[in-house]
Amino acid sequence: TLQCSIRAMIAKRRMRELRQARHAQQAREQAVRRIQRVFRGNQGRKGYASCRELYEKGRREFQAASKLQAMARRDAAIKRVDLMRDAMLLTMHQAATFMRKMWLGQKTRKRYMALREEFAAHEKHIICMQRHARGFLVRLRMWREAIRMEDELWGALEIQRVWRGYVGRVAYETKYEQVWRREMATAMIQRNLRGWLARTKVSRQRRRIARAEFERARLRFRSAQRVQALARGVLTRKVTSMHAARKTRAAIQLQRIWRGHALRKQLWGQVVLLRATMIQAVARGFLVRNRRFHLMAKVILVQRAFRRARQRPKSVKEKARAERKMRHDKAAVIQNKFREHRESQEVERIQQKS
Image 1 (cartoon, rainbow, N blue to C red):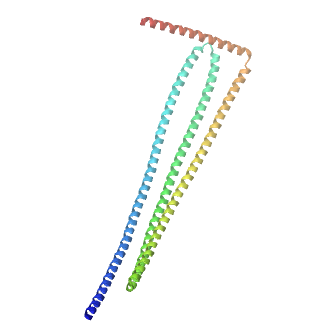
Image 2 (image 1 turned 180 degrees about the horizontal axis):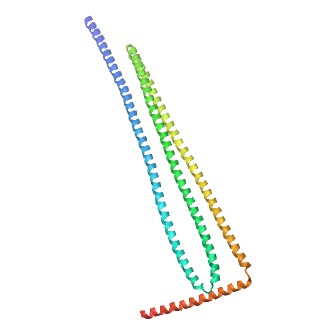
Image 3 (image 1 turned 180 degrees about the vertical axis):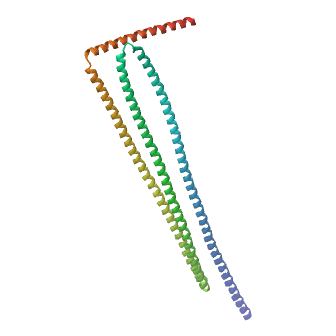
């Protein structure tokens, strides 16, 4: 009985030792699996972060290339529209010039034929009319020359405006591209430097934690669990704070770039509006002064003609009225004869058809 008790006690002690050893082995295996899981999760998050950075970089490059292409296409479209507008204006100007030439030719020929019919009977008056007509032609030529000079000045101002706008846009695009390249290079340098610092810091922390774990390996299992929990909490908080700080800096950088772009765009719109207002004011002032000058010239011409008419004697006025009445009567007679001739022709045409 004593031997059975001793053997039972020894067996129980051995079983207790085996059970404790098995529990310790299971605890070590579970701790190793947890450490492996944490390490693999950290490596997976790093890989995802690097892939995410590559994707964001490709997306930014694609957006920048798309914007550059859109700006280039817009410039090409503006040039093409300007060429089409210039061609259309040239065609309209040529058509208007040709129509005006035909109308002036027909009017001049009609006037010339009328003058030839009345030349023999009204030579003195014709000479006076020629004098007035030549004065009118000289004034007309001077007016055309003034209009042509005005058109040339307007064309020169328009060409200067277009060229200055093009030079300004090219300078702005060059400056914008330089600033964009500088910012991209700065961001890449900051990213590489922060990555190296983070890797160095993490490696030091890992070595320090590994040494601490080796020194604390002889402690009890509960103490080891507590130390592991504290170490994992510290690592998680460091990684989380690092990611949060990085995201905050990235958001601040994006906000700064967007606000700068919006402010530059608004300032450029104000500058364009101010320049357009100045150009309109100058053009309107020039047109008003030109119209006032021509109006004053016409008023002076009318005043001179009226004064000359008032200074003429009454006999000359009566004679002119009689001649005008005689011309009117002759014109009425000619019109009646012409109408009778047309009516006779119409009657003959209708008789021939019937």
